[in-house]
Length: 132
Image (cartoon, rainbow, N blue to C red; front, side, top):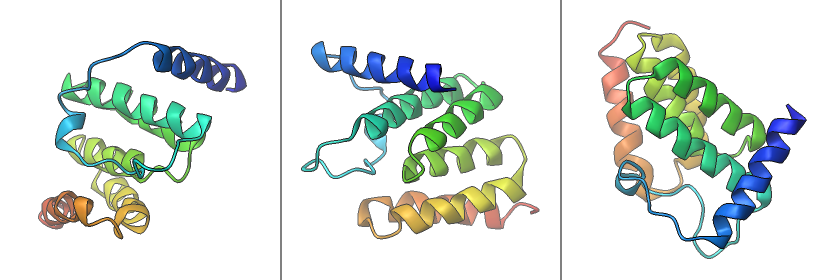
């Protein structure tokens, strides 16, 4: 695990040296981090993992995406976006009980951010129509 974290720190550092396009998917979601505050290396690595997880989810690889989001959470447990995305893929996989738990954690981390209210409420409404 420590090798993986070290690898992601190196990748994040390298990514900072070259411009990279924004993911189409990420542009439709607000950020969990303030643009005025610099990210720590752990936060940067976690954000990069969330982007990888989103790409896997967009391709329908929900189990792989869930693993990546879990890793993003282990790198930075304060990354509310990772919890939100994990709730989404758990919901898509039919694991509504876990989805509720991850949504609640995402709400505790992102609920203060008005940019996230619509996304959090939409997922809450979607889950409320499913069996727990």
